[in-house]
Length: 378
Ligand SMILES: Cc1ncc(COP(=O)(O)O)c(C=O)c1O
Image (cartoon, rainbow, N blue to C red; front, side, top):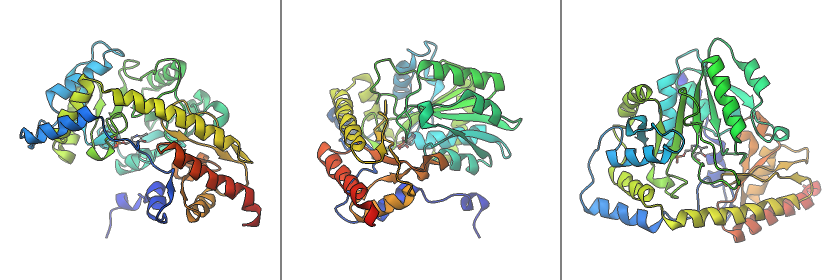
């Protein structure tokens, strides 16, 4: 009755945890900022609706937003123009459009393990086979070139990269970006670079985008995290002009066009960057430091400092399945995400989101501490 495509998909582990949570639980499973969108962006949305901007717009997005996005990327490649930009319904749609534009049945796609939950299902939906590559803690959660080389076959079409990473928080240093770009050139692969956390970095060195590193790049980005507007569903992809024309065909047939008033609001946010963004990132930094400090105090827990995004990815050296640990924590009122949800190498880790107040982080991690101290009796 159902297509093999849909039978290849599972309900996301993150959603499952969420739906099973008792009322009043502390939610450190969140994948979204707990802030409101900036005031100027909200005002621009309301004004856009009042002004009557409530109709379909151009499929690739309104020109003003495409131009503002191109300008944002000019620092990585001065030749960037609005023709390189397709505005989508979130980074999620941009990832699917990239997959459907680039992968053929029988292709293989290198995806991070652990990695964000959409990459492998999107490959399968396009008929391709996801091939996981390792991001190991001992390697700073960065890809290993020797392993990547060994995974390439004549069927390999693309590599998906994500920096800053969900779930590990790792940020690729420039030399890793250059290494992956060279690897892709050498093997004639496409790079799909998911950069939705590009502004949420805690490193001193500036963020290195894949944009401008190679012609074989599709960059995916989003306004969800930047402007804390996850529910408005607005993102985009950047690609060479010829690829953007093809991607726009797929995008049109899935979505017709992105939300018109949300695009007007996002344009305002890009053209006049609101102060709230920097305030939000400064608060995330404090919460990151708090989260890592509290986690490392718990017996058997080891947590490296994430350099970007808003997730800690501690290892629990308890010899227990983190899937079971997360289930038991849920009964105790803490929502976390078991590392297994992000791939086999996530096993032994929990993803702890610090997109929640310092008070809730303290409450949530006190539950984890309590669990650690009493687990022998469980
Ligand atoms: C790494 C990564 N990519 C893409 C997305 C998709 O975000 P959106 O569709 O809201 O833009 C998310 C959301 O959590 C994410 O963590």
